[in-house]
Length: 563
Image 1 (tube, rainbow, N blue to C red):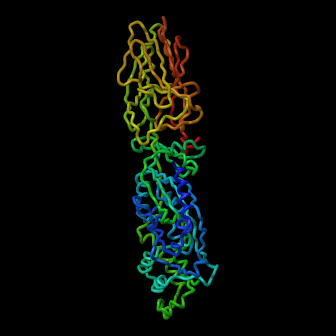
Image 2: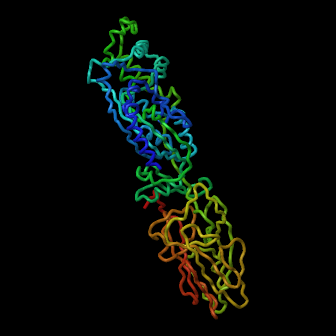
Image 3: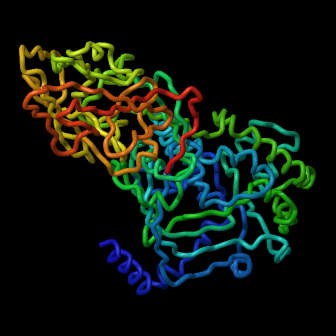
């Protein structure tokens, strides 16, 4: 469908070449432009985009039929060049950089206003509010049809042909030679900060999407470079924060981003009336100099300028440069656009599941972990339960013969903004409901003591059967290398379960492999496993299961790298 539209545009362009393609952008050359109030996206995202910075009735450069033939250079392309592009911005600075991508400026005073470019425009303020204050990330996809380029040939070429309009000359000559901020500020309000000397015209359609910060984070985590930093702090009810370096996002990867909510569609120009897509502009001060005033004698003879006061162009130019330095703050722009620090809470991943309860308690989360416990009555005769000397499970597991295991259970399956899928790796978790995406299920049965069985339980437990024997269900995955660190909350210790390799590495955490040996029933033992289950050995003969205990490293790293 998209190719059909593009081909139709090209066909239409060729058929109507005299009307569309040979029309150049000369009507924009010499117009004033206010770079603080302007915005190439237009003045209102709900309307066809017309740049509010263009001073469509303020002509600075005078062009005649004779001079235009030499001073106006147009490529007069006879076809449309249509291309697609994309961009991501997440604050005032990145949006400004996005807009400046099609702008070239020069001239005295330019450095005073360019850092504030577009930031007084209505659309810019809206984007800045949404990105800086609401922390939205916006993604644009663009379809551009370029109808050609037009430029003004600047001095020193054709030195005798450069002239300014009578109206502009009158405005300059009525500026006081002695600096007056109010009068010079009004001059910029009326005429703009710049003058257009080059333009690409055409049409552009922009689809703007509101993008998930979490999705951007997932893309960055696939990079083999420094992509952010992790810190431990209280943030929105979470304990671990991921500071994201969105500027690391490469241009080629922007095209891989899909989804998001369509925020609006912006159209710039029409086939019959193409609008500027790119500009080259000189500061208005650049045109208050002798090189552009070759018709100055007529200004005196026609009473446009006073012979008594004279032109005094150098002093008036200096005054214009001075007011340009003050112009941003006069428009209420007290600071340059900045991008916010993008912080994302590192959450416990999406889904319902369980973790073994360490003696330090359940991990920090914005939700409430449901808790429960299960007591297993192990073999009474010469009980041989055993565990790692430094095991970090609750001390209740050390009750020889009747260990009590505690659990942290996530029963909420809400797809919140910051919730992620479990990362690829090699590990297991406890099953509660359906296994999260990427996991396979399995089970382990412990044949508990047959005589006077004292099994008991309370609270919320992992999926399983807790009668005279204990059957527990697990979710396991092996779709990643255990040596590739995964990102999980690091503010408090937690347990995962060992699967088919060594314990899974977790960013910023040390991992200790621990074990628990359960002395199960000696007679007619029915210990069993099925499906995908944690690493367990010596089935039917005092089975040993392996745990992976994680706690934050002492020299906790601030930076995080993708892979």
